[in-house]
Length: 517
Image: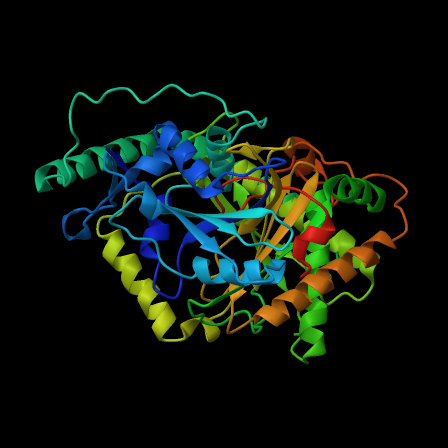
């Protein structure tokens, strides 16, 4: 019995019918040559043999009495595999556009909280003979980095499926429902442990805050230079309350080309992604006469996970990055985006010991649930000041091809979470030499056709960045100590992994299969 951390539980409390808080993946597979079997049955059989390898797949929630504390995970020893693993056939002709629209609809429905919080769909009927696989799992149980670890459990590195040890015999049956006394005792023990950790952390926290303050002071811009300290974001059409209806589109790019381009123009892969989004969003809004004079701001999740930590929980924070949409000159805009991104990550790097702290709050479940409901029903999101305009995240994934039930995974597209006030989520995953984009949005704010339009703007933005002249010298990322001593805003601390909010694993392939009908 494991109690959810405050961060994990927040994804449960902030969930409403309009804002499902699960993350997912859309994967596309090439079946083995001459395959004549039933791939759905093969996948289900494989998953049945490996469920015990991942805690995410065989645990469910148990709520605390009167929601006085966060819920706990308990083992479910009666999983109905036919419920969790499903099959869907696309209508003819079975285009990529049809698949994306199906995924948008599947992603809009809530997960059943009385069961383990995951579902998987084997989707056939694609016109090119490939098979798709869509997964979703609640964000309370997994973040993007933990999803990659889960992929290593469920997927193989060759067409031959590896044999896994069978589950060990259980010597005691877990109760279907825990008693009130057990639950309250677990909550009290967890709170005591967390408060003890808080006390032990105080010296480290004081040091981290001092170093972060020094780094922030070193980032103060000179008179006439663009400030690295961001104010509130301007209001846009994306800063609105949302419905549970979704639009979804995908795009695939060669990762090696993006890396070379980043070095040539003086940035990183993440800078290229941010600049592409900046150009695409500016053009989309300008064409409709909706572009604000102030620069757009992106909310960017960052990982707080220590190296080697494989826990299936959330260890994330977020930074705000200046998209510099008020700058017309592209080289200048690119430098501003890179400087803002690196400066934000430098501060997070120093605050990492503090940001990951779990603080138990009595009664937080009903308090946060009430606030989430109020936010959606009152339309406050469109009237409140905005911290950011869109969510943009970049998740590093496996570098090699993966296989599932003998089929080769050729694409891996992320499917993520829009929310009230952030109606568009742009998430990017790397997989086997590809950079895979997934745009998930509220369909009322960004229709399916407009989502495809945004994809075309992203492609055009990449071409503009490719036309930039090469920089004379590469931008060097300094250590936190060096960054603290430097006056240059572009001299930032070591890179912090930028992550998402998505679950499962990978895919690859050419642009052709990426979206075309």
